[in-house]
Image (cartoon, rainbow, N blue to C red; front, side):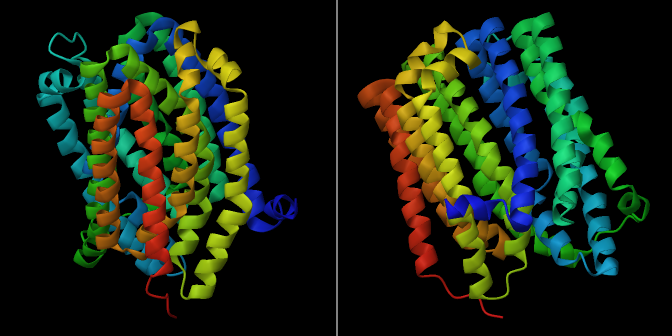
Amino acid sequence: MRWLIGLWQGELGRITSLNSLSVGLKLVTGFVTSKLLAIYIGPTGLALVGNLRNFLTSIENIATLGFANGIVKYTAAYKNDPNQLKNFLSTVLTLLPVMALITSCCIAIFADYWSFILFGSSSPYTSVFYWFALALPWYLIQIVLMSILNGLEAFKKVVYTQILSSLIGLVITVILVIKSQTFGALVAVVVAPSLTFFCLAYYLKSQLLAFRPQCNRVFIEQLFHYTLMAIASSVIGPLVLIALRNQLILNIGSVAAGFWEALTRISSFYFLFLSTLIGLYFLPRLSKVVNDFEEKAILKNYYTQVFPLFTIGLIVFYLLRHLVVSLFYTHAFEPITDLIQWQVLGDFFKGAALILGYRFFAYRKTGLFIFTELFSLTSLYFLSRYGIQESGLEGFMQAYVVNYALYFLFLLFIYLFRKPVHG
């Protein structure tokens, strides 16, 4: 148990405990919203919500040009150089709000088309995209401000904002779902995340007051590498998931697609522990690595202190799967308990690979990142389609396991034969 004692010592321990508070609250709010969605919209409605969430992720990365991780990296790198930091942030805060407004206009103008693509030809939910267009600029600027706060390593402020975001999302979702069922759930997806903008603006008021419009070509070129990486992961990735969900609907039915979304939703709750901790602690530190010794120490912290805790959580989730499903959903979702073993096993490999993938962001290894992401997405798409044809939804879930096992082994191979980090 020495690894567990070590986890709570030092800065990583303090950040982990603080992050656990935020994740714990998100689990509670996630439980309430999942139960609410299960009661009011069922598996079919949940599949529509899943499509909209994936679409939101793609649009988010297109409109921010995929700069989020790059903003974390360079904010951390320029943290001790106030002049350079001021010029960098001014460039970011000049360019991205313009992109947000352009994207919002495209969402509103082509609302009918987006509704057809995501919800089908007879969808009554076109007006969701008008709400989306109104909320999007605030949401995108909020993402930029959160990335700045991450880069400044203001851990407490990041966690407090995440907690506030969870509470706001819960209140908005409860009100809208009870009032308007599936339509309300869809509007909540696009509106709730934008409302934490004002909290972040308060925390970063000194940086915002120092803002002077400019577009420095050097900074834009540095960040453009992250645009290419984001296209591969956060734009193409969600589009692949939408295509696979539509394949499930076409071959098995919308209920099966809803079951998959239910599993993915639970998975996203416990992955918050890893993803937020990597964003808060590991990514800024990897961004400042100057030699192999530092890199190995960071990876050792992850695999000996953080990942074992995540693995224990997966085991507990599997053992309590019937209780978890009954708590989060309704009796109609009971069939997913037979699929949870595949979700857990796939998530184990995905969690093991996560930190290795973030190395590419931290070191701006654009070509390697794009290659590995396209490998994973192509593998996931074709394995999943084969799994659907062979064994239905279970085959689909088995494909998820095989894909992330291959992805982890691929990243591990690249790491073992990497070019050393030199000072």
